Amino acid sequence: MVFFRKRWSIFALLGILALGAFFRLHRLETVPPGIYPDEAKNANDAVETLQTGDYELFYPENNGREGLYIWMIAKSFEKHGINIYALKIIGALIGMLTVLGTYLLTREIFIFSAVNDPEHSKIAIAPIARETVALLAAGLLAVSFWHINFSRIGFRAILVPFLISFGLWLTLKALHPIGPSGYGISERKKLWHALLAGIIWGIGFYTYIAFRIALGIPIFLVALAYTVYLIKNKPQFNKEWFKNMYIRDGWWHFDAMFAVMAGVMLPMLLLFKRVPEYFISRATGISVFDEPSWILAFIKSLGVHFQMLFAVGDHNWRHNFSGDAQLALPIAMLFLMGLIYSFIIIKDGIKHKNWNAIIVHSALLASLGAMMLPAALTWEGIPHALRAIGMMPFVFIYAALGFLYLLRIIFPHKHHREEIWPFAFGAAIVIILVLSSFQYSRYFIDWGKSEEVANAFSRGYVEIGEYFNNLPSDTQKYLIVNGGGIDVSYPSYVSGDWFPCPECGEGAPPPDYRHKKELPMSGQTTLFIQHTKKTTTDYSFYGSEIPIQNTLYLRADELPALIRTPAVFVPLDATNEIKEELRNRYPLGKELQFDKFWAWQVNSMEAN
Image (cartoon, rainbow, N blue to C red; front, side):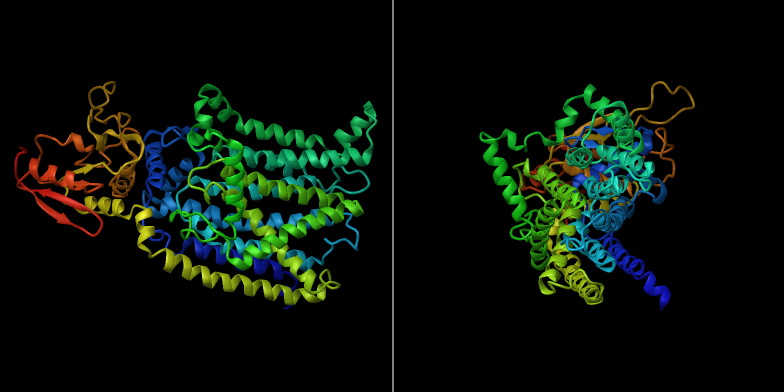
């Protein structure tokens, strides 16, 4: 029992991490019930990366995507094979680690604030209270529909809250503690905290466009802390003072942090300098700056994205239970209370000159606002939960602060004392367990089994790919890519014009995978599912066999005059026009009607 009492928070954290893992791994291959073309494009680019060995910094197609997540998918395919699990496990693992990052960040916020904290301050709490609030923040994220959903989809944006939570935690560790004697770097400050923080902030540049705004968070935090340092130390600006400040108090650590960050970012920065359109490609056409009155558009978008937490959320079934608030109502109320409490702490910090509390809570507020901006600066599809994904750690930290504030209201003279916190810890566990029960039913049953979600994740396109994979090897398969979406490239082994490598010479038979044809995005889902039937373990550019055989992807106006039979034609969008065209062109065929797609099967004939 003594062993458990001393390590109760570790056991509680392990339980929360296990709960988060369950929600992110349970039925991972089947919920959501499909693969959206954007996910499939990431997967197919990862397949091509394995084939060619070219790990690109930036993949320009599909409006442009930073390369890190695609590299991770490629490595997952290399280890687990090309399949849905290998595609989705990356996001699930990142989501699980974000739960840990949220705990560490919340805990450090209290540790940082408590340095030189007056006992009568509104932030003074017992260690058990600090641990309980940090565990609650992590637990709320672990069972959040918002975070669970994006942890189970092959979108690279899931890296944003993960890197932000760990990056800010390490930056605070590098600054901690800023005490009254010098407001500099004490002996507890470790250079490696600053260097690791620089690496993480730099890596974020390779993830998602929203992270470019997140880079302002460490700059703001360090600048604010340094401003406080100057206020307290009244600089003389002489050689001795500079030596004491820069060397003894260790502010050079942060020059090192930003230098490392810039060094990690440098390859991508050079690419953006060489190809400037890559930098803004993802925001083209959806920015508030494209609106006639961009200020009004921004104010409207900002308001819409703030209210989505507790009123009307994202309407996209891929992102949310359409239209529902991103937070359950009790958590939304705690979030608002947490915001209020944070302002009270800042006000109290000013009154009692608790500079640490001012710094950390100002940084927390700035971080929330900064990560709302990627969504608020857009007007298309608002509110947009995906673009606001970086808000999540801060939203749940504020909700946990709201829980602390609620206890302060209920126990105005005892909230900081240790004796009430076993009760508070029990209440926090009950909140997490009740929410987990609610979210399981809501996510895996109500949302996961709905027809709207199946359609949103292109379940029909998945079934076409599975159908192609199960056809006899001698059947010629034609996918009519008429489902819409912007044009992207397809490999020559499914788009035609297949030819051998001209430089290879005699005895080197491999085909050239690099020859590509452009077709609409909608065919990417079926292409990925066909890739899952790969029969060779050789991913190199000059593989020994064609990855997908007897398959041709084409547009509706490219139907061949002559075909090799047996053959099957499947349009992504089975309109009456394309059905009639197939009947007229190949009159001896027959219709095959499946649950979510239609096919025209031709066993023996020549085209008209």
